[in-house]
Length: 350
Image (cartoon, rainbow, N blue to C red; front, side, top):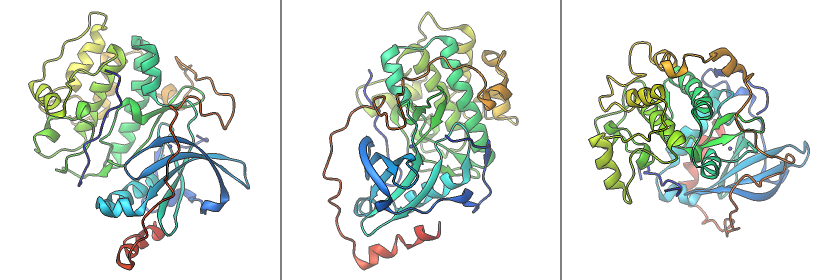
């Protein structure tokens, strides 16, 4: 059951921060870097276009997570606009529960995104060790995600890829949402299929057009998985998962708190117009649910509440909370044609 979830693709990693969404084009003082400025070390994760490595900036000694993307793979999979959108959105977002983009740059063969390094590893690994979380433990993380989604949605940003693998834990035990590869600015609806099978809302599977309600559906899936130890809709193949999602039958374990069960049912409502978070008050309806009755939302935002779990971190360079990855031949990247090089010129203006 505890396999890392595979994505379904569209079209083919804190310092003190302010809780806000940046103004369009403000760049939030993005720093300019070159690859030679870093000492590159451990791999933190891998993906379709490359990998994420821990790096240390030689001059400042600051550690970051460097996302390294092969341009040739981006071209082959027709994802130039997709990656451009990810960089653009990360520059707009400035929130305590989101992994912040420090800067980005490129060279002849690769694109690089400099992200803050979140030392505690993935929520996925923590959940796998624990088996399942207590009601209060799961609610703590859910509260922080609710506030992150509320901020994103207020700027018409839909995240579309919530899952334990995309949630990192800080040294003080707080959530950081990472990987904005599927995030999109959506005024009303979009029709592209993307996400992770276990977390897809019915309207995505049915190609009915989707928007912000898909994030609230995914929160319901996450809450269930945190409290049960497994997702509510599971099968060995994606088609089987999709069938179960559309059928909508959920079997709750006996230990579930009735209020948590009620929240999950209201988030996992197939009719997106009736789903909690989809009404006129949107995120306020989610925050007002009885499972959150004792939640001090300002204290959550201020990160003044003690965390249920604080990861063991020995220093800025400590990566033991991340799964080990073998080194690869990542430096082997195909040279680009002149025409393909032109497609990346727009990144210099971001």
